[in-house]
Image (cartoon, helix red, strand yellow):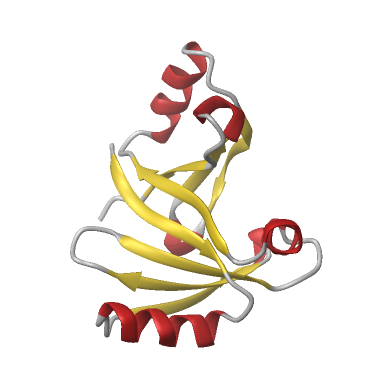
Length: 132
């Protein structure tokens, strides 16, 4: 596995993307709305990973709840795997708990989230990109 992206919850994804682009000297940014998760995201491509800024698109979004409770900031880290189903099975065998089933994510990925209690308070996402 490798780190795929770091996700940050923000109130305004457009404004936050401008700040991150300037601060990190990044030109490459993509915007996408993931209706199933209730978020609009900006993806900033770095040399060795991505930063994903997330803004809620509705009041039911988990990101809206996160922002209301904790404010803007680090939301989760995402780990890339070529075999998400196999990793979930392996991790469940080690006692790792997941928040729901594998489901569609941004850009055609498959994703699932590891319960923060399983990783000492850190929310982690497993993601598997489509084969090219």
